[in-house]
Structures are given as structure tokens and as C-alpha cells.
Length: 264
Ligand code: BTN
Image (cartoon, rainbow, N blue to C red; front, side, top):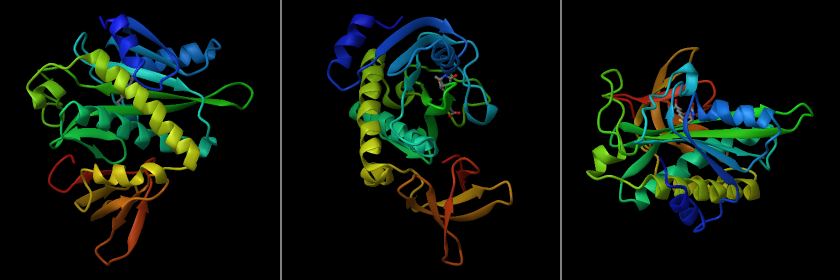
């Protein structure tokens, strides 16, 4: 189990101002936070679990969540943004995670819009969900899974997934990482609230963008096409140059992007 005293000590170093509930096991920390919100809880609040029995990823996928070695947590927050801008918090969260991994000595980068990768493999995924209350107000659940000390992966994800331990060659203290990310979320989200968009984080995000100036395939349901990823705009959409020299804005909700030669 996470050591709660250690976690609280680490949290004091930054600006996270909410409670953290540490559970031994749960179906999904996103699902648990949604249940708490429906029961009247409001953020800031974070729920973390040693194990998820039904961890969820984006696009209906599952998130492999074995016990004891990784981090699975969800932050519940009242976003100080209009609902249509809430998706901007996801790239901001990816940046917060990336900073913490880099501070731990890992060469992490961001695969647009919000996967954190090491080399060509994914080490962290983020699932953001907007929760409406009965009176038109909203809260946001930002669910984050980080492969920390995991050594083995199932065959079906072995080629695309990795962990901090596999890349860094040592174990990492999960309490330090969790507190670092929660404190970082508070900072990065305040930055977005103050600017009203991602302009304050754009430069750092682009420096960490794994596929910047790389050839990518844009997987648009209306038809895939190839181009060069240039960076992001102030709302976090990817700017991709088409072979004819025109620049297209790619919206994260509709399409995904993969490298020409692999996942990144
Ligand atoms: C992705 O598909 O990349 C997103 C993965 C998000 C996984 C995290 S683990 C904690 C939280 N609870 C969930 O069920 N999912 C998110």
C-alpha cells in the first residue's frame, strides 16, 4: 500500500489543496470519483488505488492495472473554465506528468495529445471525463495511470508499453511521484485558468512533443492522411502540414495520430 504519511509529507511541497483517498482496490478510480461526485463530493479530491479490476482507457479500451507496482489515480476538480475548454486540461495534465518523470531522471516526452512516452513506448495514459451535476454545473475527473515499477507486460501490449523501472533501471517511490503529479496538476491547471487556454504551457509542451517535426499518419474516420506534425495551437490541437504545404488543425476528440514507423 502507499504510505499515506509519506504521501502527505510530499504533498506539502506543492500546491495541491485537496484530500487524497487511498484504496486497496477498486473497479476504476474514474468510476469511483464519479460515484463520489454523484453522492455530493466536490473537488479538489483525488482517489488512488493499488489495483483496478476494471481500469478504463480512452476509446473504450481497458487499462491493465495489476496490484502494488504502479499508480492509478483520478483527480476530481471544479474547472474554472467553460465546459468547451475543459479538454485543454488533458494536455496540461500530460505536461504535469512529464515534468515529474523528467525530474526523476527519465527522458519522458509527450505523444499528442496526452500520452507520456519513453523512447517509442507509452508509460502513462490519461482519461479525462466531464461530469455534469443536476443544475448545469460541471466537475472534471482526470484519471491517470503511470507504469512505475512494473517489469513484465502482457504480450498484447509489450511492444507499445513500458515502465519507469524498465527504462530507468531502478525502482521509484510512488508516493513522491503521486504527490509530484497532483501538485503539478494544480500548477498547470491554474496556468490554463489564468490564460483561458494553453498559451502559457504551449512552448514547454512543444519542446516535449515526441512527434514534433516528425512524419505522422492522421487517423481520420473520414480518411487517413500523412503529414508533418508542427506543434499545437493555443487550445491544444495539433497543427499538421500536408504534403501540399497547407497546414491542417487536427482535433483530438475526432482523430488520433501515429508515427509512420511505429506508435509515436
Ligand atoms: C489511455 O487510454 O491512454 C488512458 C488510460 C487512463 C488510465 C487511468 S488509470 C486511473 C484512471 N482510472 C481508470 O479506469 N482509468 C484511468
